Structure formats: C-alpha cells, structure tokens
Length: 150
Length: 429
Ligand SMILES: Cc1ncc(COP(=O)(O)O)c(C=O)c1O
Image 1 (cartoon, each protein chain N blue to C red):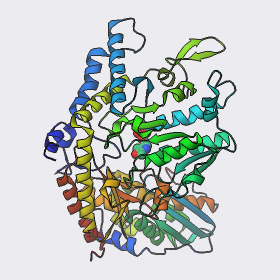
Image 2 (cartoon, rainbow over the protein chains, first blue to last red; image 1 turned 90 degrees about the vertical axis):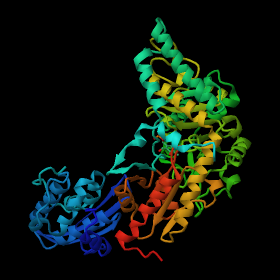
Image 3 (cartoon, protein in one colour; image 1 turned 30 degrees about the vertical axis):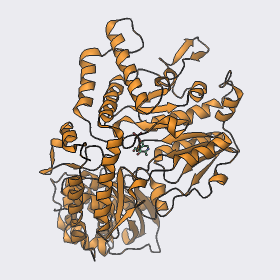
C-alpha cells in the first residue's frame, strides 16, 4: 500500500528535531478528537526567521512523520516561506490524490501524498501543521496572508 | 453449535455480500453499529409504503395503523427485555436515553416539579449539593458526561469506581463509594472497549441499601446476551437500536414504573401533554411524557423487526456464538506475543469485543493495515478516553462482533494483522 512509504516509516521511527525546547515565543497543543492523537508544537521566531520548531507528538506514524517533516521543512526558513510550505502541504493532502506535491516546496512531504486518498488520515497529517500555525499566532506572528487559514 | 447456522444468518444481511478494496467485506465493527437484516430494512419500507401517518392522533385509518405499528414495536421491545410496554420509552439513541434521566433528575429539583409525588420517591429524585453520583472509569462518554453535567447543575459530587489493570471494575471500595449520600449509580453492563461483563448484582444491592437510583448502560449487552430488567433489578436501562441489528435513530429507555411516573420530562412540547393552558401545562403519563414531538415511528417499527430477528435466533444461541468468536480472537491474539489484549482473558467474563494494542505501533496504523485487507475494525479511544488512560494506553484497536460474524472472519483478521509487524518492523519473537 502506498500510504506507508519507507520515508514515512523512517520519520516516524526517528522523528527529526523532536522534543520540546527553549526558547519559544508560541506554543500550541492540538488533539485529534477522533483518535486521541496529540501534538504540542513550539515556535521560536526571530524577526522573520523561524529559528526553531520543537514538538512532542503522540500519535500514529502519519502524524509523527508529518511533525518531523514540518520541523525539517520550516526551521531556518522565513515565516512566509514556511506558510507557503504549509499551503502546499494542505493543498496536496486535501486534493483527494490529484496533487502529488512538489518536492521543491515540501521536501519529504511528498511521501505523505498517499494520505490524500484516506480522508480519515488527512487530519492526522495536518495536525502538526495546524498546531504550528496556531503557535505562530500565539507568538504574535500575523499569518492572515495565508489563504484558507481560519 | 450445530443449530446455529451463521451462513444462513449472513444471507439475511444484504451489506455482507459486498466487497471492499476488491476483497469480501470483513465487518468487525459491530460494536460501533451493527449491520441490518433485510427484515429490518423491509419493515421500515413497508411502514412507509403502507401505513405512514401521524401516530396517536387517530382520526383516520392510516393513523390507526401507524399507531398500532408503533405500539406493537414497543410491545416487542418490552418483551425482549422482560419489561412492560408502558415502561419503554423510545428515544433517538442511548445517549438521549441517559440524558433523559439526567435532565429529568435535574428538572426534579425545580420548585413544584414533584408535587403529588410520594415523599419517599421524591426524596430519591431530588439531587443537590452534598449528594453524590457514582459512575465508573470504564464508561462510554455517553454514560459519563451527562452525569458530570448533572453534578455541575446541581452541585452534587461525581465519584467513580476505578478499573483494574485487567480491565475489570475494582469494587473493593464498594461500601464507601456507595453511601448514604449517593443518589445515582450509573454503570455499563458490558464495556464497549474491553468487553468486560460487569457484575450488576453487587452494585444494585449496594445502591438499594442506600436508596440510590441505578442506571444501566446496556448498549453492549442487549445485542449479545439475554437481558431481563426484572432479573437485573436496576431502575433505568438504556440501549440503542442501531447496535442490535435495528435502524439508526431509535434508542430505548426502560424505567421502573414508579420512578418513570414521578420523573419530570426532559424535552417538552407536543405529544407529551395532558392539558395545556396559556400559563401552564400538565403532562401525559409515561411513556408519552418522554416522547415529545413527532416520534421516530419507522425506526421503532424497524427495531421491532430487529427484536423479532434476534428472538428467532434466540439470545442464548447468540451468546454461545459470541463466545466462540471471542475465544477464537483471544486464542489467535495470544499466539502473537507482540499483541497485548486488554480486558479479561476468560471468555465467560466478556462478550462482543476484543481490544488490543501492538506496542510500538499506533492503533490508527494497525487499523489502516487491516482496512487495506478489507477488514473493518475501530481504532482510537472508542468514546472511552478515561478507560484508556486507566489502562495506560493512548488508544486501542477493537474487533467487535455480532450474530452474523464468523470464525473465518476472525481468522482473516488475524492473518491480516500479521502484516503489521512486517510493515512497521516490530520484533515478532
Ligand atoms: C457502552 C455504550 N454506551 C453508550 C453508547 C452510545 O450509544 P449511541 O451513540 O447510540 O447513543 C455506546 C455506543 O457507542 C456504547 O457502546
């Protein structure tokens, strides 16, 4: 089955940048109420740069791998770039399989493309990203430019 | 087992003939909702095609037929659980049944709500600060949150029986937990997660000693075991039609006659009144008092057909069949040391469902692998989050059964499960 790409399994077994670290300006805790997956994401922003994203993810391989990919793809980038990455991830994950994802933009995120065919799992993959944008808001970052953001 | 022909049973369930992901459907999620035999689907259709009309307003032939069909369903359900039809209330589901009791009890504390009710009954129904409501750590959220809310509204205190590591109720503090302050003891007959059959008798005895009202969540027992309210001795019992081969949208509350007679209504409006004036209203006797608005007639009729179906199979035979399935699942899982079964290991102590964890693999991933083989199970906390916390697991995978489930399906599930360690690289030794 195309859901569990080796890359996903690798990320879920050895999540990159895992753990909660100081300093941080914003923190958000999100729960997937249907299955109990939980993730806490902290962001450390300096000016326009995402200096660090740290997290504690308790959940399925998809949500943990997604948190790991999130950290890899946004640490060291500008806030704006990180939000474009989020948008690209979201577009791919909600495309019902139509959008294979652009490796240039979302890196290892393309390995999560298979998730789009399993509606119940899209939430798992988006969980850390939703927590990330929420943490940015709590850090006082204006993310209103992002399309579709609540 | 010779008399129980499960293949014949399966032939009655249209959905069991379909395929999922090009494989025959293996539906092991009956604990969430059961499938429906053709007789139930036909009963609803026939009701709509032949008799549909407003009930209890019988100025014409169809209305009389609709009323008869509705009331006949009530009689069937009553007989099925050893009750009188007057004491059977049709609701939307078990969740509403439990809320009906919880809101009835908080409404009982309103001024004048219990006028004319014998004082010893009124005393049992009035809940306030200093009183206690006892539940268990094993409850489905449907039998927990309404009691938390009742406590919040009345100032009563919520207490609960803990669960042992083996997934059974820990009754060692029974006599302190159920005391003279206790007004309600609410608990499930069978756990929807670990399948434990809880001991009703000691809980009822303890509640009776202090005059507390017992509320039994029978959602997971009525579909699998012979259940009789007179034998159980509880005061209220709630269950859902859709888990016992019946339609969605219909649930049942049974109540002891003298308590139902005194309990104020939960939902008010049409059909539940005796007399209405501009400034006040008097209420109909039960069960109508608790069936405000236009009722779910077609669904009740469908539930009547489900009860007929189960009665024809015989609940003793259904129970025996369930034991075979649970034993097959327990035996198969025991041969897989990488699987940890939750709940009792003795089939006599459980029914309906087998929940487990694979250490190192999240249940969501386990469920996904099984789904890929066309096997439907449930993963997550199954609306029993505190139970999972008590068992120190974040979530679990649950295979649950019904009268149409087969040992071959259990075997297909076990075979598909073997892909889990393969995919996720779990040590199988
Ligand atoms: C033990 C138990 N109680 C209550 C409920 C709630 O039933 P319903 O959702 O039909 O109201 C369920 C079903 O999920 C259950 O298994």
